[in-house]
Length: 379
Image 1 (tube, one colour):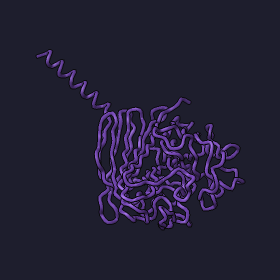
Image 2 (tube, one colour; image 1 turned 90 degrees about the vertical axis):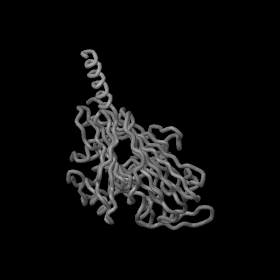
Image 3 (cartoon, helix red, strand yellow; image 1 turned 120 degrees about the vertical axis):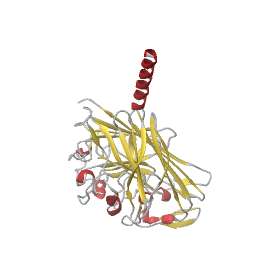
Image 4 (tube, one colour; image 1 turned 90 degrees about the horizontal axis):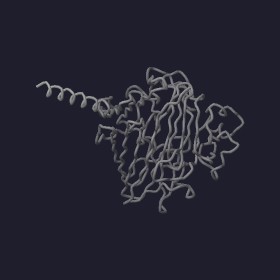
């Protein structure tokens, strides 16, 4: 009896220890849209206290909690605490954007000799899929998985002609969190007609903490790009990609984000009121994710690496956060309170045959993988 009790107690302890180290995926209510459609959230956690909450509205990353060098945890993405914010003042916080992330000039493109007209929602251009892009629909929640890699899959079917884009497109986005503190986002899409696609995540990061009261200008950024895309006054790429050498866009070695943002004489920074540019990543489109970005916050010691299969990353320094919206904990978001680092194909690619192709045909599968790896470094 005593031996059986000892074995049973040891086995229970072993099972409990295993459960404590297993990742978890749990679904909870988050709110509802204006027409009463329920919106659920999925929270992924690992044994190190890292967690990611994704809401079905826009398949958006609503929270990402990671520790600093002392183990103190903070949420490092800007977002709204409840549905009212997403419905009233959408800012693409954490959203899956599509069908076409970024800008298409004049909202027009041609495919196989046929012209398509899109909604104009950013000056003279189409931006992030239109007036009701993927960021403003309720996605289905598919399979949830707990274990060493906790994951959740979100699905959406975009009908033929939605926002002017051809073809019925079926999209799946899977978020997964592992025990190495890496959040992976996998995108997959198919179509029944030739179309264009460019999907990304539009999280605003602040490694100091989204409600810390500190901006991003004192954080260090490295982008693995020798060239960037100069833009017109309406932020459409013009001409060929240009070398970053000798410009404020040279992040080949780590630099403080605020170090050159206030140069004032660079027309490119004036056009975007800061950084809002595509960086041409070394290696182009790849099958396996490559290191694209390294971001660190010297004060907290938090480090984020972005690895992606995409050919470019849009670095946006939060220039149009203007103090008119309040996020989590009632914190009012101001200019440079967060930055977006959007792995994607280049802006206006449907009108630029010299850019990597964004065409998707029936029978093909669009795939994209981006990994956000978190760690800390000593002071």
